[in-house]
Length: 168
Length: 181
Image (cartoon, rainbow over all chains, first blue to last red; front, side, top):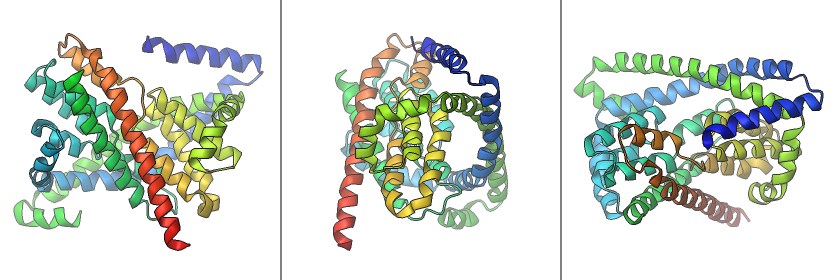
């Protein structure tokens, strides 16, 4: 089903554009051209954030954090095996996808842990990355409250995933 | 960052620069991918804008956005509407360009739109996608017998996380206002 939605929407869009006498080709080119300057502008911020995250991971501080926080997460109903995923998720999208692959191959695709991890991955978002990209190149300061709120929201999502996967 | 550096100076000083550079390399290749992905999506979005469909979408979502984001400006509402609809369809990469445009257009009158910016960030970073395609794909390829069983739990969990985020932001905003008044 979902494989068809986007292509169909695209066809409708192009037909609609032709009816409205919009130059579809030129519009596409104009939009595509802007992607380079967009990425050019956000590159330094992504780079800075990702380098920080990499240092944080190899320094061993992240596993320390996992050890400290896992009792708290266990208390909330999040199994220890997926704690690291919950903590890594806000920082890196590709990193957490490969961690999910790991979890699935270790515990089996139909196990509670894997389903739980899959749920957590898709109900949360890379908070730090999103905030770096969205607020790159703006003069807005003090977005920390929103980041903290988003993180709390993601943890609520993780707790809910663990609970729901148990009963569903 | 600072703490990690200090720890590393004691544990593995030779890893510092090599890690920074290899991660930066990853970011470069990520960005090249992003140029490609955004080129396609921004091209499509440009067609959407020039056909006037985005205005129609904005009109459709006008009321809830006005209430939730507390913004009046038509252009801002348009970009927010585009961003939210792309998010719903699970097109995170199509959502990003319109999200950035929304933030940029809000920058002009920062005082009134600070709340809207934070709201956009919270909604975008608590994830509101309808179909968890990546996770389902991974489970299915690992031989899961019922990979789509995670759709419903995911949908509920992601809705909960977004509602929770929006709610907390509203509380925060109230708290902050009462402090200044």
